[in-house]
Length: 125
Image (cartoon, rainbow, N blue to C red):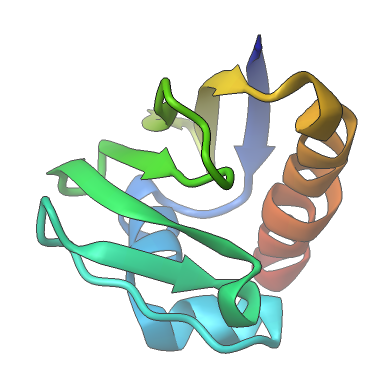
């Protein structure tokens, strides 16, 4: 199991970024794929037409999203924490993704950089 901590900057307000990663219609706009998402703790979610699935754990509007991501029969949960902080004309994003299976680490890291935050950055800029 590995952990990943990365930082990103997106030219949008924390409220705009928060809406983009929690509203299923917004997610579909920047991913181009089907998404099921709510801001209710305990509810399951699905992104990229089911390629990413999990359970929502915690939401702090415009500030933080905490989710459990599913990886097959993994015993320890893989937890994603996205923290949003305003910084002038940008939002500074801290990503912490824990308990990533070793065999998935490289794909997950690339996915965050290109498919998730890369696509989100293109969407706003």
